[in-house]
Length: 353
Ligand code: XIL
Image (cartoon, rainbow, N blue to C red; front, top):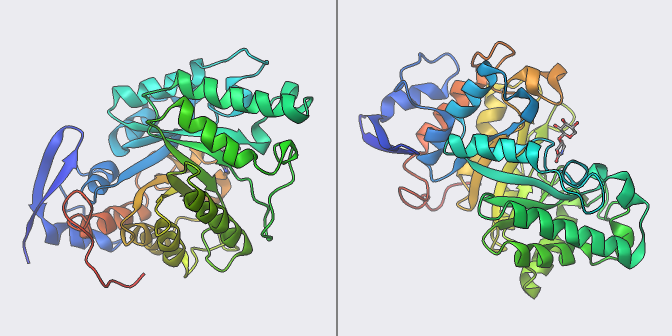
């Protein structure tokens, strides 16, 4: 079958091509029979989604790194430059230059930005940790307001709260944030909506990909409660750091669909998979593509050497910047689905999750 498809990129509609050529990409051994300008971002755009990467500001001087980052991705997440300790290292004194640099890079390349992250227990400065009670609460919410106002109009989605739930239980993680009162997450989202009404507001976490996990159920209950009570939340980020102890779960699609059914967008926000097996990458991408409200996929770094777990070589490009076997697997999966996205029409009904 030869069918012409259109892929939307930031430079317009391009790459009318044979669907059969894209279908061959779904096998790792496939020849590179694709338009030269087909990239992860362009292929994902054909499904109505973005494909992003984490960016480390100090690597922006590396032309191999910036070349791949600019070419392949349509969304950027600052890896460490927007955490609390990075943006407000001293009380009331903000440091935006490192984050600005990444936002400028994204702007120069027509990419959108996920803000990461406003409130996260490991990324807190020493001055904050010495506060308590209502003073701490006020400092947290002032931080949310000031950072969001600075970036107003330049951030697509914010991870307002990151990793607030404990592993292996349905309980919230014990942290200084928690000790400001059980409603701090809700207050953060309400504060964020006022600070930048146009930004999408996300809760982001790991270990919530398996529907049967207690942590997943707890986060689901929180989002269900928020949506029922009108607490502003637009999206849930599933980090999706997978390895042999925590592989892509069989219930991944069920999880994404159940959250989406609450009326929020879902996103794969920090994808990396130990040893980058093409089949596992294909499975993760397919899972997102089968959920209409799964709006995008971000991998947590460009090359294996850029990964926070570089020893497990979990990414789509090797240390030399060459495409690994998982790359055509992902591209092929996106290409197979490029007529099924929100841009070019609704998903086909009745497909298994
Ligand atoms: C990681 C970064 O990649 C590292 O550079 C940093 O040292 C620690 O944090 N969950 C998150 C990300 O939300 O911010 C983390 O990123 C990985 C786990």
